[in-house]
Image (cartoon, rainbow, N blue to C red; front, top):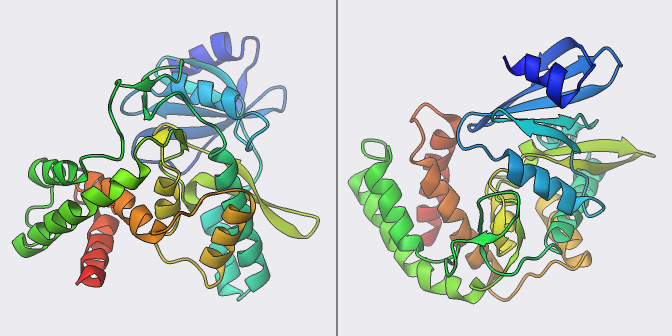
Length: 303
């Protein structure tokens, strides 16, 4: 039993008194719980690959760089971390947009950009993906930002796009990926920390002294070593409240984030990896449906 492990190994001597399910992603299930000491934690259970060792190692590496939950224990395909206060950025932005509160939107946009730039200050020996807690990028010689055309073709062939994207749309997406692939040589060799799911649902925000700031960056299971423009493309994929994108880019630059010539086309091309990967998820999944809409927008703007 997972809760036996929590009480006897992860937090020996503690007893769980309350539990509350948190909104989760496709690859994990999260439960906030309080113990008899009054402390609150989060139990994260991986539904796919066990990324606990990687997330724990990244939490240690990021201490003092950006706010991340402290990892208490890993095991049994799960991770226990301390609960950090804050509201999902997605919720705060929705409220601010409803209230037409431009100051809140701009504060959060700027803080989000600053946070992303600080993530990019963490570097590794090479580009690549993390297989374990050593955070050694691999496999050797693999460039994460290469082969976009091959990746898109594979996702279309093996995923669930058939019957949801027309044959013409699938051909157009393949053509778009083939044209974008050579552009990405501009970011080959970059070896910065990439969150790879950097969007408002994975960020917490807090109001401190009348100003809103990012208080935590969550869900690092997809992180890798590569070009930070991956995260820029992710954050700008969907429409944001007026003023957010401009403040986000301003904060990113001010904190030292690099936006090279042609960065918009590069970040958009890098985001196609995620959109294509979403096509391999079940058609009823919200990410699948969102990917269809975003791909159609992308193809329309490319005409």
